Image 1 (spheres, rainbow, N blue to C red):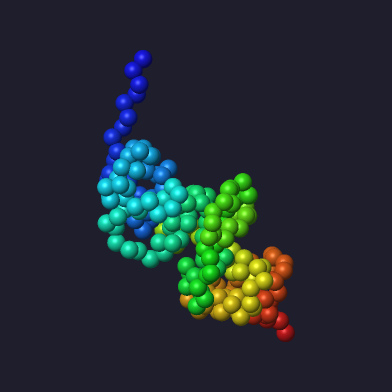
Image 2 (tube, rainbow, N blue to C red; image 1 turned 135 degrees about the horizontal axis):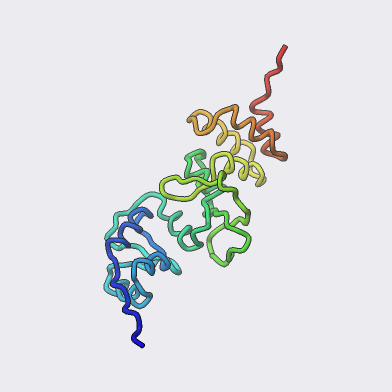
Length: 200
């Protein structure tokens, strides 16, 4: 029996994938485009690709792009990882504080063996995840909740809430209704910042 012929690598397909990810791609994505691991290693040796982390490569001639560190982290951890917490806050530009580590939320079954990354395990509902700059990220509401619930300074949360309201990323009514359904630090802070008006 003859073995099935291997499909030729699709350079254009791989480029399109990397183009949407700041010039980076994962080994699993390259495999879909017909690039075997030996072929990836060959292109890395001749300088066409750069291996940046385990299972993550970069198109060498692709220009530097914003949020490259987040793309690398997301590709390394896997497609079910989501930018969250302080990293999501920075991605929305709701804080002046640069995160000391990259924060990602992952399913409880995911591996946590990723050095230099801060992984949070949580099952996120589909309506708690959106896209920003090509990256999966927790929604503004979910991000604010995570920040408020993580023993961060109240001033950091207040600034983020104020910025989100000012820029129209969330409305007072939606924020109040969301907080009313929850308990803990986030609900208390929003109730303090956005007190319910009493009807006389």
